Image 1 (cartoon, helix red, strand yellow):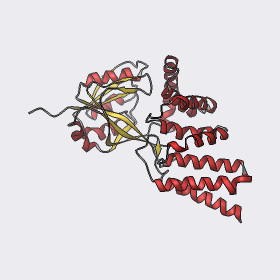
Image 2 (cartoon, rainbow, N blue to C red):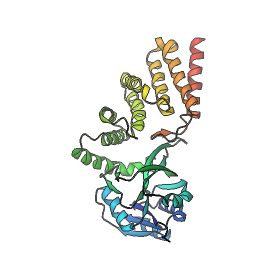
Image 3 (tube, rainbow, N blue to C red):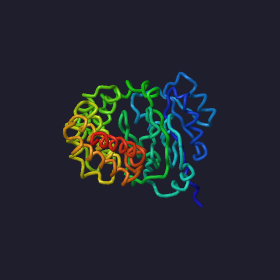
Image 4 (cartoon, rainbow, N blue to C red):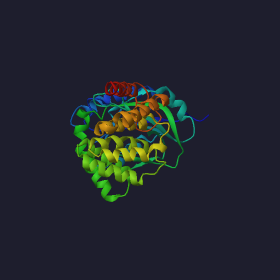
Length: 335
């Protein structure tokens, strides 16, 4: 009788004493091994990881996330690899891993729930995190899985707090430099343009962020899973950068593409509300009723955590809050 497949958790880490125990304790019940590749920690990361039951190996940081990921995959030498970062943890679904890995080789896409500064509502994206033997990574930063295996979503929810300001600040310059190098080699890659735009936004360089996001939109494949995240990030970015006409034009151009996305209708409502403030002469008769309709559509659709880049609440309480505001505005202006 064949033995059950071996599952390893693989991490790359550097100076993650703040959070690595949380990560490993959430993983340990569900895997056979935990393999950590340390890339030069000067804090207690290594000791904490070892105390949590992980095997720790060392590699000088190669300035290449894919190279580091592939190295730890080789060290694990497992049938299945659960790939996490130290600032992530399993929130739900760990008990389903063993049964899922009894099936044929395929890429398991997990739901990453990203904590947002100043908000209780996370953003959500679906990323391949359960990999069969043979899957590899490419890309210095925002690395992508390379595999011919079929793709499937797995009911695994992973928390992530690495985008909070205190955590992101120490990694921003590193990611920015790596993205610049990657873009120099692949200047027409729309995914890299999108990610560089988001890094520029985080650095508060809104003109550059808009430039790269618009370039990404021009060539991003319609079928790309991340295009929903791109569109719903680009519309508010343009408005925030003072390019309200461009934001309205983009929202209008994308109207027919996202009939079941509360995120699209939420940002559509926001940009229509901004337009009402910029054009008070048509606010009551045109812009505010359109914004109201957009947020009502959010509630009609409901939550869609399956959409890449979705934000919790846009199909429920966040849309309701916006509706309350616009109804109050309409009542005040009509009085």
